[in-house]
Amino acid sequence: MQLLDGKATAEKIREELKLAVETRKSRGQKIPHLAAVIVGSDGASRTYVNSKVKTCEKVGFKSTLIELATDISEEELLAKVNDLNLDDEIDGFIVQLPLPKHIDEHKITLAIRPSKDVDGFHPENIGRMMLNLPCFLPATPAGIVELLDRYAIETSGKHCVVIGRSNIVGSPMSILMWRNAKIGNCTVTITHSRTKHLDEISKSADILIVALGKPEFVTKDMVKDGAVVVDVGIHRVEDASRRSGFKLLGDVKFDEVAPKCSFISPVPGGVGPMTIASLMINTLRAMDLKGN
Amino acid sequence: MQLLDGKATAEKIREELKLAVETRKSRGQKIPHLAAVIVGSDGASRTYVNSKVKTCEKVGFKSTLIELATDISEEELLAKVNDLNLDDEIDGFIVQLPLPKHIDEHKITLAIRPSKDVDGFHPENIGRMMLNLPCFLPATPAGIVELLDRYAIETSGKHCVVIGRSNIVGSPMSILMWRNAKIGNCTVTITHSRTKHLDEISKSADILIVALGKPEFVTKDMVKDGAVVVDVGIHRVEDASRRSGFKLLGDVKFDEVAPKCSFISPVPGGVGPMTIASLMINTLRAMDLKGN
Image (cartoon, rainbow over all chains, first blue to last red; front, top):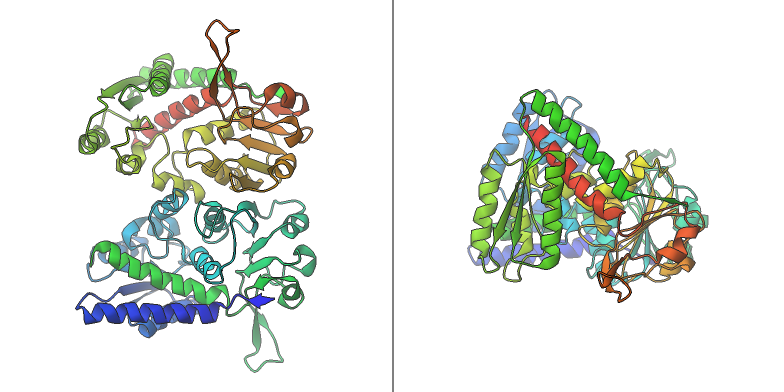
């Protein structure tokens, strides 16, 4: 069994991005600039956004953190989005989800100009993804593709089973895995809450991508010997034995599944760091596409 | 075995649309107006476009056929598309594919305003489809969904296998079948030219949707007893024994597969008429969405 080490891979990508930024600097070209909008003070959201901003610093990107009060109106947030759409200094930006209940998330996502949508959530980017046209890929699925690519996982003709059909992971992931691309060309089965005989299906997977959001859902009986397993889940679970008082678990019961796998991504240190790396790659591309 | 009779179902839909148009007329409201652009004189394309125009007449829609010379430049065609985007009288329009080689089809598709894209080919409509947001569904997959719905086929929790991953059928069809919707909630496996053991996979399908474009590719050994089979293929094959000199075949070997099925769509008279019906439904919706 070999680990799909997202932490190490993301670090390598950061080094590459840093080099790209330095080259740009030396040529007097613009430095990529990511803006992140956060509404309210949800702890997890703040952690995510901070880590995105911190990664910008590490790779030499500029970043702007825009903190807005929980009671901001939808209209005001839309105006902010529009400002960012029009601001030539900002190459790409994200609005951290979830948003407070009084704001329609879809409306906000749709308001982001597709050419600055480095999260890859805008329908135009998703449609372009399905059509295999240039686009920003959603960060988590793109990070997984990058991880599989860097570990030279053979995907063509393999059976990929995706557990979960969410808008941000399961659905786009499935599309990416069947597309005619270097990482792609799989026979893909997408499963979800209505799926029957999930055990049998997941056991037939050469590549199993788990994104349903239930701690340690996938057990060893659900995985074929030699499978490649990618665990997208991340759950904070109380653990009195640790100094922090908690531990992080994935959707896969790692200890018992890992020995059966050819490759498996751990939690933490697997998909998570790759998601942020993808966001950085998208931001660099956003700038390049603008012709800066 | 019961036929999924697309011809009869499409006729029923036409009657419903006719009624909707008459109601609008009696209220002094606008009549839906579809424009169809055809470039060059390809026989098959002309047949398709003519049948779309004829269907408009049948249901009482206005239609405008715009015939352009094969040697029209990309720029001129884009200008035409833009005229149609801006023309308030036109509710929706299509540009019949394929286009001559010197014109970039994607560029044309992208130029069509999503709110008038009644073919449902624009990336924004495809992305909205994946996100389960209001959109124009691509006509062929939408027609299949409508057909399954009108025959009250239970899809939730079923295993749907799609053969073919084209942009206009296989890929969007797969997405529609896994979405959380009345016709949807399937476990979906998408297969294509790189798929191994296709026979086994297709044989595990409760619902088999065949859209790979090879005459009589699916034989009885590939189909489970009691399966629902939808045949999207249509091929004109020489047949000296017929007065016309040809016959139409699907992607499924109908005679030997049909007896095994609970439901099967024939060729012709299955998916084809439903595709045009979907286009009409989209056109009516395009007008409604404009608030006319």
